[in-house]
Every structure is written in structure tokens, then in C-alpha cells.
Length: 400
Image (tube, rainbow, N blue to C red; front, side, top):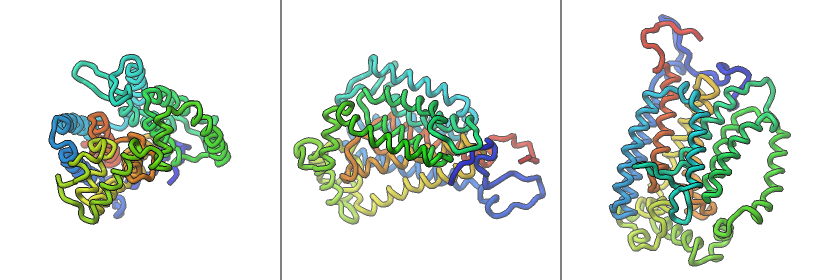
């Protein structure tokens, strides 16, 4: 599915266009006006919030971390309601660059006087508020990229030089997040934007040039930019015996937990790897291992299907969107939720280096939970806008 950037209103043809009263609608148009996507997102979000809360309760033993998670969940649900049923996509478009600038200011504040925890400076405290601006950057970068393409209309495919402003915006956030240090989140922002770019017409020669540039700079990044612990993560991924008592140990214990769950799992609160403290970081990085051990292959598969459904619905909402901005925001947020899930699961299964990316709705940490709820809220807002729920209800005749 490619997005034609020649005209804003023609960027993505909606499946449903309101017609004059008395005119006929085909089955696709009638289906598109039903709240099927909104209802599906509500059900999936409810399932993931409940499953994540119960899983964290098991991983933490119901301590203060769990109750903090529940407080953050209430904040996330409140923000979700506002974004889903009050804020319109056109308001998000207007505020995209302002929100980006605000997040960048937060990232600068983290580098200047942020809170240090787990060997990294990623948190900032403002009165009763304590959070990670880098989590907000995931939504900010998706909004900015969508507005960039919505405003930059051209008749031909994009070339690298056409994307210099977008590249600069991404580079600024990357440069602010990388020194925290947080290579995982910084790289993840690039991945979100690349996913959105995949739905735009791009010159093949430009893609080849970009790929060649990345291949050339990888050795330079390894020797001059990666810190020692980041190199250790990659080496432990390639060979778990490289550091048997460090990162390699974490992944090995994770594999034991996942494998011991079998087909049906050991049952809620009966995961031995977790409750006997063999599994490190069971409340955050390796929380999927807790779920897989207690609910088995079937539970893990259900979780995979849930996130795959989220991504699919996001793409369908993007396909029906009325303009390029809404479509690319839906694509970016769908990529955020599914790819972050996929990387986290691949990490605990030793299919990807340990990067510290959380599992949406599951990992402890209020910032990611709140941002994940916000992403679902924006998707519902776009779907409601596609169905005309933000239009004047007294109007009975619409024009294309």
C-alpha cells in the first residue's frame, strides 16, 4: 500500500465517503462506518492492560512496584479517553511541531539534571511527575514525520535530498537520547520513521545509496560510538557463553523460563524461574519470560496475535484515513506498538541483542504504559474522524 503524495485529500482514498441522504451505499461503505475498529481496539487494550497487570503482579509479588503500575495505568486510561474522544487528528497536526519541541526540551533537561537509575540518566522529575521524555519521543516523531509528508507535496518520488529536514528532526532526537545512554530507544525512533517512509514513494537509487551508507558507517559506529556494555550485549547475543555471568546469563535464564512453560504453562503465580529469583529483570526487560512460563506456548501465541491484530487494525485505519497525516500517524503508531513488542520478545528468545526496550502494557514503568495507552487513543481518534464522528451532527448532506 503506497501513499500518493500529489494531493493531500487524495493521499489515501477512504473506503467510505458520506453521501447525500437517500443515496445507496455498498457493503464496504456501510462496514467502514461501523465502529468495528474502535470496538476491536478497546477490547484489545482492555485485554492487554489486564494481562499486563496480572503478569506484573506475579513478577513483582504484588509489591509497591505493582501498585505504582496501577496508578500509572489510571493516568494512561485518562489520557486515552481524552485523545480518543476529545482531541481530533487536525489538532494533533497543528500541535505536532510544538509537541516535538517540548519533548526535545524534556530530553535536554534529562541530560542536564535528570535522575540516574540503573546506570542511566533517563528520568526527569517535575514536582509530583516523574517520567521518561524518551517515551514521549516515540509519539512525537511519528506525528512530526506524518506532518512533514502531509505538507511536502510533490509529483515525483522522494529523493534523499528531499528528506533532509525530516532527517534533521530525527537526528536531533537521536542525538539527545543516545547519550543517556539509550541506543535502543534512539534507534527505535529511526525505525518508526523508516516504517512510515516505506508507505511513501521513494526513489530506488536513494534507497540503495542509504543502504550503502549504513553499511559503511557500521564499523565506524562499533569502534568509536558504542560503549563497552553495548558491545557486550551484541557479543553475548552472538555467543551467550561470552559472558556467562552477565548478559549471557540473563538470556540463558530467560530461555529456560520460556521453555519450561511448555504448551500450557505452569499456571498463574507458579513460575519457578521467576519466584525462585533465577530470572533477572523479570519486571521489565524479561517480563515476557514470566508470561510464557506461566501461560505456555498458547498464552505467548495469544499475546502475539493480540499485537499483530493491533498493527493490522492500525494499517486498516490508515488505509481509510482522509489525508496523508492521519494515515501516516496510524502507520507510525501501529509500528511503535508491534515492533517494540516484537523486539522485546525476540530479545528474550535470543533472536535479538538485549536492548532494554519495554514490552508495551506489560513492563513496569509508567512512561511506556501511558504512551502505549495514548497511542491507542490516537488510533481511535483517527478512526472516529474517518467515520465522521467529529463532524457537525446536524449536517445531513456531505460533499466529497
